[in-house]
Length: 269
Ligand SMILES: [Zn+2]
Ligand SMILES: [Zn+2]
Image 1 (cartoon, protein in one colour):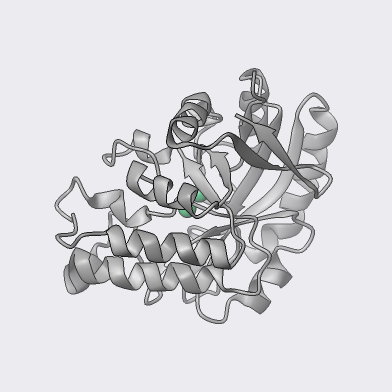
Image 2 (tube, helix red, strand yellow; image 1 turned 135 degrees about the vertical axis):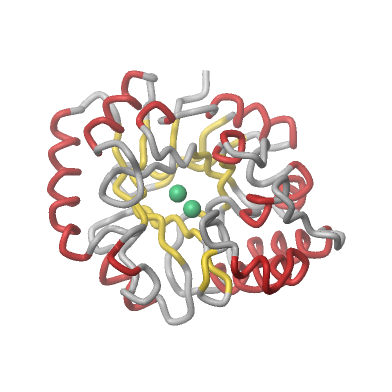
């Protein structure tokens, strides 16, 4: 059986509801073999006032120490120290400084024109741009993130603008050209993309990426990682084996796995 791997999780250090210890214990109880902690990386104050989403800069050393303790306390599970890093114009220097010591940088494009696109409490940018224009700008932003000099190990939830498509914000344009643009860009920049189960727990009711986009990535030979994006311990490893089956049905026969020693493995699905 394919090893159980979860490459995306959050704790109380960022916007998660469970502690690092609770998250790791829950993953271990699921039989998880490789588990990545990917709290939202610290952001500039103007992008994340009061560190509401990202890890407060002052807490970075404590997170590193807690991670080391969790490794000692849980020798039965391979822990990978990562961050989910927002991409925004000029983020490169900040990201390298704040993520020091982490070995897995997961890129999350949550902002278009520096404004959040997945925050239900502020739908301002959706109202202003409308879904069609938001999708176009998102794809351009996403491609610029792929082109970044940062060593992103994977691109999280690639079609995140689907987040509100069942809540009145579905695009009217054909997304096929946008999907081709994204797949071509991921291929040309040598990126991996994440198959995420998070959308299944939201109104999207489907995987990120959707079947059409995942098929484009497959055609473009873009490798995958798999993650739950758990924000609660009970969601650690949520739906991961079903996600393997989903990727397999699309044509994928392997996934890539970041390892605790900073290497990568390619594992049969
Ligand atoms: Zn994210
Ligand atoms: Zn996340």
